Length: 189
Image 1 (spheres, rainbow, N blue to C red):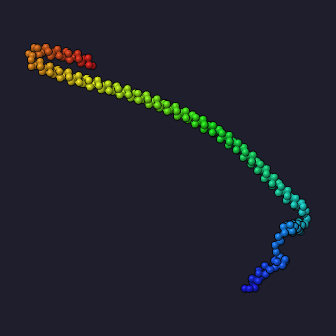
Image 2: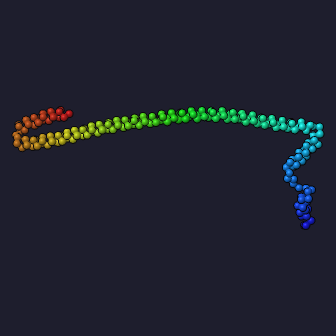
Image 3: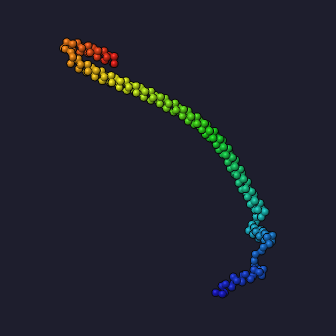
C-alpha cells in the first residue's frame, strides 16, 4: 500500500525542485502559450498560411459581430416603433377613458335628475289619487248616512202617520212621500 501512495507524495517535493509546476509569471506564461499554439498551427497547417488562417478567423468573427450589431440595431428600431405605437394607443385610450368618464358622470347626473323628477311626479300623482279616494269615500259615507237618516225619518213618519191617520189621508200621504222620494233619488243620482 505504501508503494502506491509514494509517487503522489513525492510530487509535492518535485514541484519545488523546478522540473514541473505552476508558473505564476503571467507574461512568460502567455509567451509560452502563444509559441505552443503557433507551433501547432505551423505543424498541422503546413501548406496553409498561418496569418491567412488567422485573418480568416478574424474576418469571420468580425462579420459575425457586425451581423449581430445590425440585428441588434434592427431589433432596437422595431422595438422603438412598437414603443411609439404603444404610446400613441395609450394616449388614445386615456383620452377615450377621460371622455367616457366625463360622459359617464354627465349621464349619471342626467339620470339622477330624471329619476328625481319621475319620482316627484309619481309622488304627486299618488297624492292626487289619495285625495280623490278620500273625497270619494267621504262622499260615499255622507250619502250612506243621508240614506240611513232619510230611511229612518221615512219609517218614523210612516209609523206616525199609520197610527194617526185614516185610510184616505194615509193613501194621500203615501203618494206624496213617494213623489218626494222619487225627486230625492233623481237629485242624488
